[in-house]
Length: 428
Ligand SMILES: Nc1ncnc2c1ncn2[C@@H]1O[C@H](COP(=O)(O)OP(=O)(O)OP(=O)(O)O)[C@@H](O)[C@H]1O
Ligand SMILES: Nc1nc2c(c(=O)[nH]1)N=C(CO)CN2
Image (cartoon, rainbow, N blue to C red; front, top):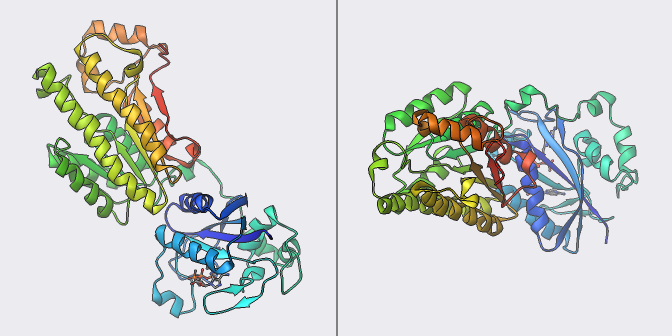
């Protein structure tokens, strides 16, 4: 069975995310094995319509017992699931429109084939440095079935300036600014505190962000407005997460509001039973509220959006646990949070298994973080926090945001089902 070279390209939004997602999708196809993947290259658009950005291109080698027509059908399905639409206008002018994902079958052994659906070898592979250069990294000796030249030789025949223009992307400070370009993010409970810090961190890095609030539309709209300063689409949505119907509406609205789907969901919202009105509730009332907001709403929202992400072939979800859920803390609050957040942490592990491999699900378990409660805590509490935190300081909302950014980024591509403690080093 010959190894089948394919080409991948993306020049819209989160290009790396689309290529990663396409490869993940191919890896779960029962009749396909992904044998090798080239590095990703940044390439200037060729024969492209005027609105085209640079592409990210890669090549891969597949091993399969499927006929080429069946492989192509899978490619078209993956392209469609990952948001590829085919506008008639650019193509009519002989130009290629921007696309979230392009998957091309380059050769299938020595087969030569020409039908309206499939041409083999791909008719333009030999004249595209953006195809030949990545392919030469993993299969320089594959022979073009018509031209009878190897990939390495075909690449050597391309003009030097065209070859040189196919470059590794540079990961400079500035690329951070675009880490989440084209990615749509919903952060629940993001009008203040940790949620707001997370929403800001994603907007700073190029994401479109949906701010969720439940009491004050004005507060949510204000945060969304501030985040628009980063240049993307940021909006506010309201939902009372104690009501299952509201959670369902949020799931639907969030999926549709910023465009087609969500790349990142952060279930951050939690009932604050330590300060304000809710602090006056009885133990039982607090338990009901925490169960409704922190646990049930997280489960309902993450399951609804998670299913859609899985069907779309990509996405990542973060939930919020609590570091002392595992180690224990005395008192009513300790019991309440341990029960509720412990359940969130356990749920996260099972959801991660349910949604793998398309969707990664992880949990952030904060320790003592200086949020609203920290601001009002007594001097004795401050002492205790310092004593119990090996790093000797409170954590800040930005510390959680930095961890969320990393967990949602391609840097954490091999992380799922984990609870990450962000707690200044407390280990017992
Ligand atoms: N070897 C091939 N690989 C992928 N698609 C092919 C191949 N041969 C023919 N096709 C057909 O071409 C169509 C792909 O059109 P598409 O809009 O993706 O072209 P393109 O990606 O814009 O151009 P190019 O194929 O030059 O990269 C598909 O409908 C598919 O049936
Ligand atoms: N750099 C680059 N240019 C292109 C590409 C591509 O993948 N990379 N694909 C095209 C049509 O599929 C047209 N132009």
